[in-house]
Image (cartoon, rainbow, N blue to C red; front, side, top):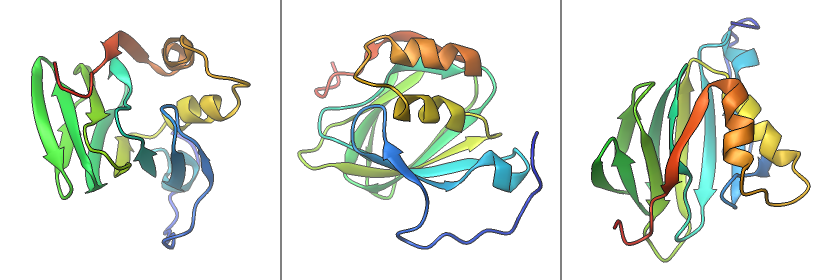
Length: 156
């Protein structure tokens, strides 16, 4: 774990913003350098019909709080609907993905414990163009394994 834990307050418009891996802005609220390596948190906007491929994390637990919109989450083999106000937790090693099933962009607060996945997202910010293998190639060095395709918007 790196860095020293620092008390941190980030206002509503605060934080560094990059393009998220499925499109839409991703705004870091706190990175591992500020938390002594225990937490990464960011707000992510997910366009309609979009979401990451089925994957798992070797080193981090992942949590989401749905701020706006409605998503379907695949957790292991089950599909769960998560409207605004829902909280989802996935322990490391569990296969998961999600898709925005609404007609408007969804907003989610994403938490990784411990930190480290911010380096994966930083990699997307440095890609010159959309790379269909980026999830796999950027994920492998940080212990993320792509296991299958994204969840379709109809949950099938």
